[in-house]
Amino acid sequence: MLASLLAAFASGETLYIFKRLKRDVVAYAAAGIFAAVAAGFLVAAGYMATADALGPIWAALIFAGGFLLIAVIIVTIFFFGISCNKRVINFFFTC
Image 1 (cartoon, rainbow, N blue to C red):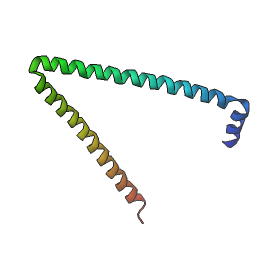
Image 2 (image 1 turned 180 degrees about the horizontal axis):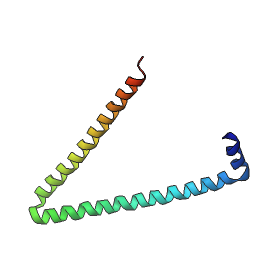
Image 3 (image 1 turned 90 degrees about the vertical axis):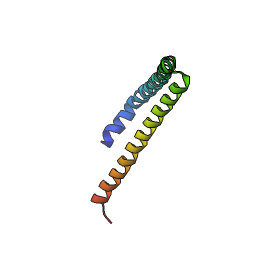
């Protein structure tokens, strides 16, 4: 494995790999930024439609509650994922 890595380094292939990696990182970063902007406009459009239907106060309360619920779900999943990983590690590697 080390020989193939050294051969790739000697042939200049690693330079090509790093150039391609840099190009891919820039492309994915740009796509991520545009996706975040699109998601922001989607939330704004949803808020405006909800505000037209229910009024601005109720729309703000509904969106705040929805985002708070999403945050709680993410934290709960993360918490149980961490505790599950600790249980698995403690099961296999008990001191």
